[in-house]
Image 1: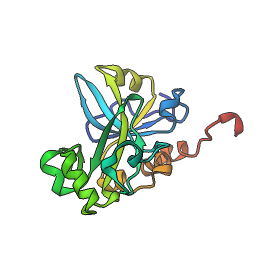
Image 2: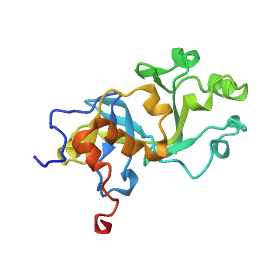
Image 3: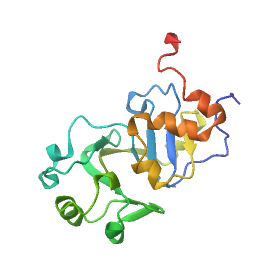
Length: 192
């Protein structure tokens, strides 16, 4: 086993974070952190947390008005779809709780009303265009190829409060040891 590889026994699951290995060749996932919303025998579904979109939410949907929400590219799949994560208890009954305190989706009409009346804070929401998805067995093949590192124990704070620009490095630093060293790898090893 290579010094920087993760233990083979760490398998991804719903609510975990997938951290791309430092030199993953796919530009869609370069230094990304993905929150897994679904992972079962049918495949895996999640959102890239640290790839801010080049457009604003109000550019895509009129209902957003002047609400100051950030929009992220959730992944390369179906980028014509809009998704959201939140930690708002008032929306919990219409949402799916991925892990305690982190909800996926919900009643969009209720959400836009809360946005327009400012009864939900923008720091309690993450919007995504598109998503990241793997067919049955595909993610496990990528895990075997050491393309991803799994971080267990995701908290609402990690999703909503941590700086998305430094999220990849912060997640590896949280894991400590060899992963902290990995977080300092240059993007281009020839520049070292």
